[in-house]
Length: 404
Image 1 (cartoon, rainbow, N blue to C red):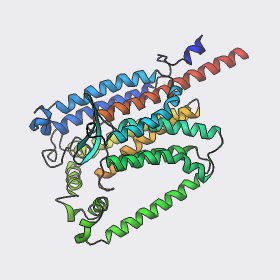
Image 2 (image 1 turned 120 degrees about the horizontal axis):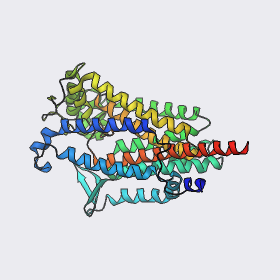
Image 3 (image 1 turned 90 degrees about the vertical axis):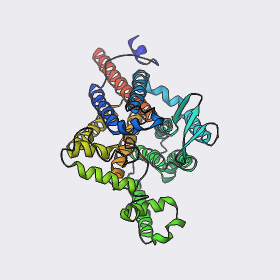
Image 4 (image 1 turned 120 degrees about the vertical axis):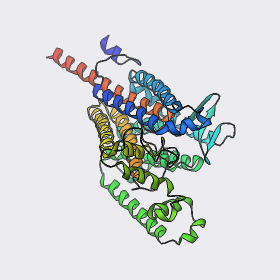
């Protein structure tokens, strides 16, 4: 009966719960709440869109996070093998959600980009559930391909990455969200890389991509600024990254203000709540550029502490992936790991101007209810992988003792 209970769809148990992951998650979330309030109270208090309530964004983030924690607890009790059943239908749902952005009554356009869906009283960012669905889909696809021994050739590698590339292309085309498209594609590629027996092929592809990027940078750097109006706006953004002071009042304004915030923070910062750049200098400082406010208020010390928290969070997820009982559990954990890692790294690179400006948020710190909710659901999947793996290994050990 015990073995049967462990294989059931829903099984609540504290055994196998990774308390280290939960503790670091708690600190990251609490730290995030503090910084969202610090970065947003000035803007929210002056904006009618936020009811002139300095705590409006904090309260909204806390509510979504509480819902996310409840969902995380539920998901952590659901056998993760169940999700593979919904992999293919989930892929179809992802494509449908992206296409629904083009329906005028459903798609919500903000600042020229349509990335939100409003269904009744519920409004959410389509990219967030799609990230989770694609992690489940890719994990399931890799397991199937591995079982069929169809994972070695160039063709099989391209076939595995094609579904993610299609969804990434749809997000880029229909919602003009290049950062999410890149994170999705990067997550899928990394998941395949982890299990591919001939990893040199990936290094060869990476060298080709690096050469392509170098060519684009060389081309953009040589363009005359007077001719930039006729060039794709993403190339303009790259040039603004290369020559920020030529665009300090336009494309490079936000990145330069972020650098001013980082530079003025020094080693220990100006003190919590004492940022100057959030007082109308950085647009929406509680979103993509919240790390700049962290550096200004808490200095290099506070920023370094947050980076260390993220490193430990990712380390715990990596550890769970290594002890996973089967390939599906390992791939789900690796998918969550690569998603969070890519998002953190991209955000830090953008804020420190080591990468062209793109709209990517800092997990658990940037304001965003949908993002926080689905990140917590992803953590719930990882927690279940750990619980299931620990319970199954304990059961295997018990059976071996009985046998001998």
